[in-house]
Image (tube, rainbow, N blue to C red):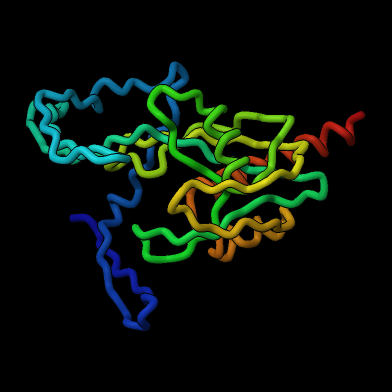
Length: 226
């Protein structure tokens, strides 16, 4: 018979909760990464049927029937989206360009890096350059790809391309019709603090800031070696 332990903790509301854990289960450790890489064949899902439920200007909604590794069939609801590009623009004074914009989906004004939707088959870099100029008025001479991310892969195909833009020059902001936002500058270190304390809670912006921080750290290390 396995021993059982009662673990107590205090939730945010101040109520004391109890949870039983099987101590034998706690001893089970996760596997380490295999030396020859992962074998994911037992994770694959195959689409066996699909139905489009909604076609919109920005996105489509589909209901998929997928065959699981155990042979059963399940339903998946997927939002199809062309994706977008987002820009971490860093000026010579180590300030980042950010925008404040109301997001109807969240019902809140969020602080984000400039970003925009990809047109069908559009080059992500061209999209990034266009969106930076439209939302902030700035242009950049130096561009570096940071990464490609899936903001919410549990239900949407949206793929975002993140870029670091440097050697900035100011210009005139020209927003799309119906687009309202405030662009501003913030010291890079302060922006990282905003990620830490939750004032920047947008995933693409947080990731771009953290990846840029790693790039800047590597540059400093290289300068020290020289």
